[in-house]
Each structure stands twice: as structure tokens, then as C-alpha cells.
Length: 373
Image (cartoon, rainbow, N blue to C red; front, top):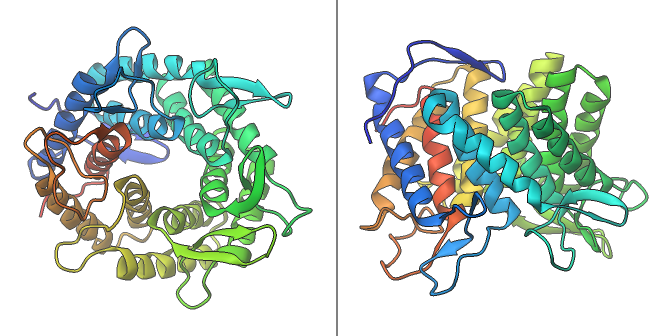
């Protein structure tokens, strides 16, 4: 499909998005190709939803809500640059995703799959879909998109508990055994986006509280990277470090700096970004190692930092990563689950989240002026 370039700029969350010049057009083409392939293979027209996986020999079933959040995010990013093509898809998908909303324990929130089914709701899933729906609302101005985003946000925040480990957000509604960076991280970004939208200081206070808790309980003092979770029973952190957990801290620190102008937040964002590059970015080809669904969150973080410190190094890192990533597709255009792995076999099952993550990454690279390497 020939890329469509806008002849005007639009303002997205404080970022002026201009048309992509020729040297960035490749990322837009790749983003367009990915979203086209996803729609052809995964779209379920009878429900206006996307399937969890294909090539598995089974009847398609709707994706998990976390996967859906990344696909909606990819469509949001595309619609910011090409609204004629993608805004109708954003609107349709956002409306269809309302079918995931359920009420359990007298609280509305998004289930992992649409009902009817036994409730199975995660605080991190709700924080992620809240972020995507807030992006959608910025595009559509549909009050229902904001209302459903608020349902997801309020559910995520209902997982916060200051009686155990002095705060933090649990992982699962009915399994309060750990408090996780993947819950608190996107929740603090959602709170900051709500502060941007409403000006209400309570959201800023929430973001600061979660940010301070995460640094106190889940941050490695040595390098600033974020541990995955902390056990409620032992009070000890699981020392696994994953790209998305440090990525959300970087983004939150950037957003806190924009609001407060307190240099400590920018200093921390840069410290954790440098450590993240050292830990997660492969020196040989620039690929962010591990699962792409986690790596795309680090892509977002590095580019958010670039918009504040104007250090072109971060765009260079992402340009090299995504240029290398494009070589990891198979002949059908599908990417591996882990960005640093070889292309998947043609007969291997393919998951939505593993394809939506590169699509999102390509489109946001265009938004931030990243060039192919």
C-alpha cells in the first residue's frame, strides 16, 4: 500500500506530529504493511475484534486484553499520522473492546477475555488498556472512550493497598500474592495522562506516590533498573529485570519532569535509560532483546526521553533497533516473539501481540522523526 502523508501537523499529547519526510517513509511503509497483514489474518469481522492467534488449526477466538491494548495502540499511532485510513479502525475496535468490561466484587473492569466466562481480571491489563483508550480518546473525543478508560483506571487503582508493603498494586484481582512493576508502572503513566487531560492534582499525587513506591521497593540501587515484582509473603523482590518495567519508569520520570520541572526526574530518566540500553540493547545489531511486547515499551520510553533532552542518541538507538528488526520477518511478514530471535517457521502459530508490537514501534518512530539505519 502506498503510504499517505499529511500536509499539516497535528498535536498529540503535547507533541507536534509533522508529515514524515522521505528518509522516514520506510518506517511508515513497514508500519502500514504490518497493520495490513494483521487485519487480513487476525480480524474477526463478525465481532469487530482481533484474534489471539492464527495458524493454530483452531477457530479464532478474541485476543487477551493486554494483546488488544498493544493492537489498539498501534492503530492509535497510525491514526495520528493517517486518520483517513486508520481512525475508523480505531473507533470500531475501541467500541468492540467494551465487550471485555465486566463487574466482579461490585467493581467494573476489563476481563482478560470477553464474557461469558469465570472472572479473570488483572490490574496490569487494566492499566495497559486504560493507556490505549486514553490515546483513543485524544483522537476520537468520544466521551464513552474516556468513560471506559476511567473504568479500567479505577479498577487498576483498586489493586493498590498501603496496608501491605506500604503500597503498590497487586497483579491479579483474586491472587494478591505479589505487587508488580507491570501494574504500578502503566498506572502511574495513566495517572499522569489523566492529569494532562483534566488538570486534577489528585492524579499527579497518585503518580508521584506510585513512582516513589516503585523506586523504594523495586529499583536496583546499583543500576536503577526495575525488578519485576515483590512477594507479599517474604517482602523480597523477584530480581528478574525486563525492558518494559524500566521503560515505564523512564516514561513516568519524563512526564513528572514536564509537570514539575524538577531536575531530579529528568536525571533519573536518563540514568535508567542508559542502564536499560546497556542491559537490553544488543550491541551487535541494536535489537532490544527478549519479547517484543516488552521491548516496544522501551522504544516508547527512549523516544519520550528524546523529546525532553533532545539527545539524538535515543533516536539513533531506536532507528538501529527497528531497522534490524525488519530483517527478522519470515516470508509471510510475521515477526518472532522475541525480537532477537530468528524469523518464525512458516507453519508456526502467530500471536497478535507479537505482530502488533513492531507495528506500534514503526508508527511511533515516524512520529518522533526516527530514521532508518
